[in-house]
Length: 268
Ligand SMILES: Nc1ncnc2c1ncn2[C@@H]1O[C@H](COP(=O)(O)OP(=O)(O)OP(=O)(O)O)[C@@H](O)[C@H]1O
Image 1 (cartoon, rainbow, N blue to C red):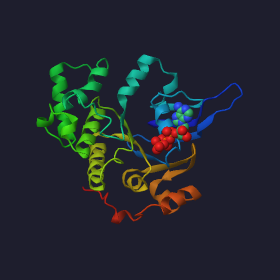
Image 2 (image 1 turned 180 degrees about the horizontal axis):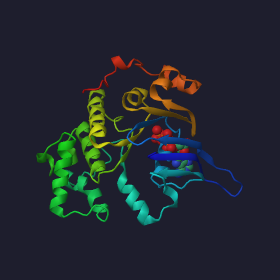
Image 3 (image 1 turned 45 degrees about the vertical axis):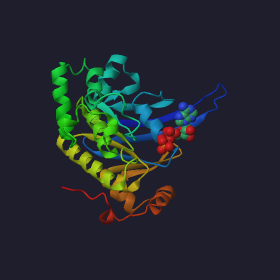
Image 4 (image 1 turned 45 degrees about the horizontal axis):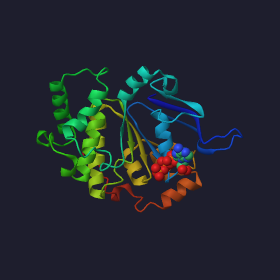
């Protein structure tokens, strides 16, 4: 198993009297190596909190999170640094997540510099790696020394993906990676993610409030509502035979439940 989350509870602002806000309530899920696991839920349901707990940016109130068998919240700082190199994140907003003042070369090089102990490289090797990554995500060498404002939203998200792949991670957290993009551009980025998963054997933890995207990308899905997982299982089972009222409500609110009519058709 790549990622195993067991009975995770996160309570914010616990006082001595034990009061607080329960953002995650006894959440358990497992992500198989090489699969795409979708986490779907409306705004405020706890998706970001769970991501932060996986990345150890938030502590847990109780429960465990294991990445490749290692208890993330029990690792030393040095061990956690090594885990972080294998577990990267692509952020929702490709406009906000790229520093406008530095070149694409420097943006994509950043993780290679941060993780230089784990992945030692000369500056020449770094530039070669950045060039290779640009080609991998459908950009080219001539983009190396340009700045983020010279790119479209879809191209910026490709740069964000290249940055996440720089240190050759096994696991990508994709936090609403296409929700800031136009629908036609979303499909391109999703097709790119599919191709990269096949080529590089990546495992995806895909966060979205968009069920169309989840159905297109994921093998398994968990539905989160007010910090609780209300339903989880293979995507087709959950979409075709939802058991929970909240899942049914989400599916009914979906504008286009027929995947054959979806703009997210896979381009082989
Ligand atoms: N540091 C914090 N202190 C107190 N409450 C918090 C904190 N962080 C998040 N919360 C609360 O936890 C709940 C879950 O928030 P979270 O950001 O995880 O939701 P989300 O599903 O990611 O939403 P969105 O899709 O809007 O990003 C929200 O009610 C939020 O107000």
